[in-house]
Length: 353
Image (cartoon, rainbow, N blue to C red):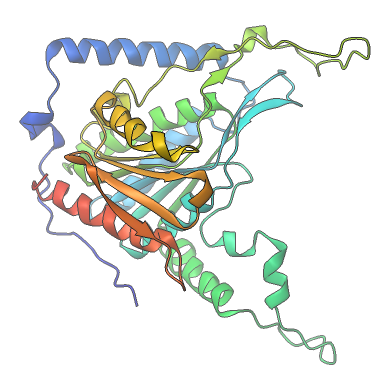
């Protein structure tokens, strides 16, 4: 049994009162310059028909935060992959693959811990509660009597629980806001819009943005082709040319330059994920990640070979002394992962970080 927790007595001090976190003037100037670069990237490469639209996202997030922000903490969970199109009328693309399993499962556990969740996800990836029905496997567990075709089918315990909790948290509670994305431009635009809107809405309510959890699980593309360099139509497959050369440019980094935790989501609690394929390199990569990104609090790392069974959670105060989290025999790894992240967030909100 999981208790649903609330924090109505949390002091509503503003995040800017954390003197140790307040950036100096030169750092502010660097943040503003980085923000202008990302905004220029968005405006130059945004597809007018994109699934992520700034005004619609801003309105939905503001209404969601105003409804829940005073009584509950807000968790922004990013999930799934991102793509970099190779044509304006997209047929082909370069993609960073992710099913969204970790993000969807984690979002469910944040809901059970009392958070209101903004689920910023790749279209078509797994989603909270719906993930239990998004593969054909669940049909094997549906029981139906062909002799009584009008009788209602019965479902497995897992599916029945998912339906109950979806009604409790989503339909009746309104505690899940889904925001779709497709391209890496959608991701940058959505992150900026969601974080800024959450920050400003909480400030207008005199609620600290330290109560906001930013949980970055998405597989984000590092490279793209500028929109004005994309062909309008599908790239031809020329039978006499056995190869095709593509020139990609680097996507501006929002997290590495402090925008996520120090400007867009000023004062929020940021958790990132690091996936590697070489075990001998993972500790060095995590340390480099932590030293390079001064706006994050936790890094969850794992190997591709054990992505579903084991993970390390690194506290940036003691990065080389991680907690090892393993999938239990019955249950899922995300249950303990989110519980530990929530415990760290408690320390942060209560000023013990």
